[in-house]
Amino acid sequence: MTHAEQDFRRPPGPDGPVALGIDPETLQTLQSLREEYGDIVAVEKPSGRLAYFINDPHEVRRILTRRHAKYSKGPGFERVKMLLGNGLIVSDADVWRRSRTMIQPAFTRQAIHRLVEVMRDCAERRKRAWQDAARANQVLNINTETNDFALELILVSIFGDDCEQIFGGDDNPFAFLSQDSARDLSVVMKARALRTYMLELVNARRASDRTYAFDFLGMYMNAEDKLGQRFADKELLDELMTLIIAGFETSANTLAWVWHVLSKHPEVEARLLAEIATTMPDAESVTADNATAMVYTQQVLEETLRQYPPVWLFTRRADEMDVLDEYDVPAGTDIYLSPYVLHHTERFYPDPMRFDPDRFLPENQPKRDRPYFPFSLGPRRCVGEYFSFLEMKIHLARLLPVFRMIRTTDEEPDLELAINLRSSGDMFLKPELRSY
Image 1 (cartoon, rainbow, N blue to C red):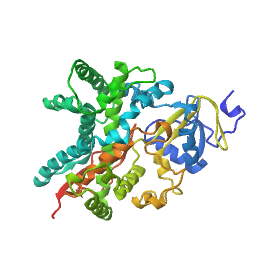
Image 2 (image 1 turned 60 degrees about the horizontal axis):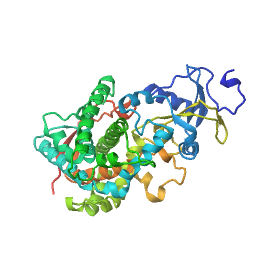
Image 3 (image 1 turned 180 degrees about the vertical axis):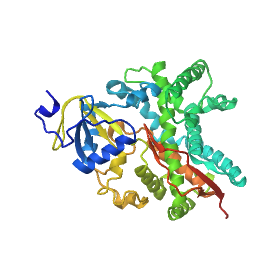
Image 4 (image 1 turned 90 degrees about the vertical axis):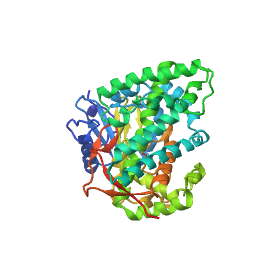
């Protein structure tokens, strides 16, 4: 018996099979389905499996929050698992719950605030490099620059004192992660070699009586579950790889888009500069409290994440029967949720291609069911969200007052729609030193 013949409330949708993946064609398909059938659409995939595309904010929120236990990771995570193992992003059920509980203390605001000085120092090093480039009249590959900044920051945040070894040699063994965005099999093989290297760092710490400064590695190594058990080596390495990849890619991609946007919107840049001048005007004023006071900067970052959500497509699979307001979700149904489509739906965000940080003014914030989820929602919401916002604010506060970025072309970059949303080609900007 086919799904169409079963007795359940099925959403509208096309009769023939529809191919869905994680690619540009899928985005076009989802946008077309929404325009023709509405915000909840049912399709049969070529395999015969039933799939729903859900663009209704209320139902998206319900699936990701109150009903999250009824769903596991959906199609498309196989490639991610090859790279990250069974870490927090990939794992499900009891494995995920145990890992999340063990890792959560490392991401409290109090813990993250201990890394503010690291964030400031990384921004200062990037500032000196850009000053040299500006004086030499060079053009910057802003994708490479933000990748390198964010990767350095997450490595120092994870490995702390051990970064003397990581950065001290001729080759940083982690450098390929920021240099190669393909995430293909060759990158997977290099990442596996990294595991051996990281385990050597872990074992060296275990054998040492040295006292290490606060870092994520120490927190992860000492984390215990409710039975007092720590991560096994494979579990620890899976979580470290997850933290490295997820910890730099989101911030790096978002910052690249921010610099691109600011090069087109001097009025936004001027308001940012005015806020930075009053909240974080110098290196001594780089504090978590001052970052919290950067309200307009937060709006700019949130609007950037609306237009360019790092994960443009989430998938889930129903493990048991679920019920939406108007439709039923049979067990085994694949669920497709797209922050990109939702964030660009006209009735939720009028004139969605226009960059407007005032959409996120505190008084304009949508209420409980706001149609916005760049970091997902519910228990599986990104554990590093606060870390990411804090690092991006400090980066902008230390660099924007020094540099005006000049566009080298009027062409808009195309989108690369793979596991993460990036620009399909590198974006180049020319740094110009501001006169005071």
